[in-house]
Image (cartoon, rainbow, N blue to C red; front, side, top):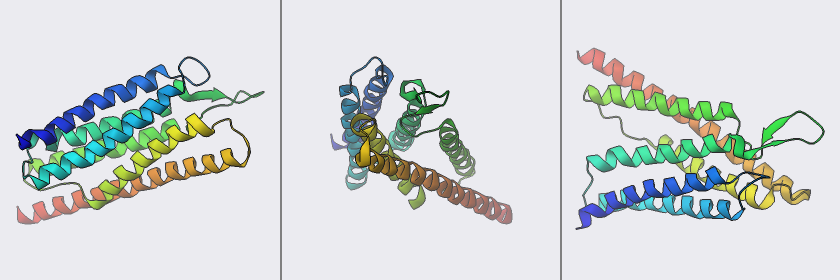
Length: 213
């Protein structure tokens, strides 16, 4: 019975991802949608993070780690993170500055940031596939785990800023925007460093394979 609990949590997180994206899809800043949608999105994402910790912890504790979890768990993580940043850089969070033609996102996320995050994930996935196809282990390292935590906290910080501080004015909004932007740049830094770390691992594994051939 216990062996199915971690997989059920992983599957449940995928369902939570669908609810989360539905909230972001229906919400539109200054248009349709109620701020309650972002409150729901925040809670749903927080629950998804808790299940992400629980499924891995329980699988290791009960020694029921399997192929399903190894494949689906990182897949759901990537869907949640990439999907979130894609929405944050999209039209539902775009505003035009008064008396100017400048258009920006209230989330602070620019399209190039999404491209960078996506490029890192594609690179690591390609390196992992090539390495494991040759029999080499290419599991997640500490940099990848830290990157995931930073990205997740950033997503929650953006949701809080948009729902409670954007447009509030004064020192409160400036401080909240500073925190939001700080987390975003931490995400960019963690993404770059993590991608560099995995690239070095991939190159080293390739060299080791060439030497043993």
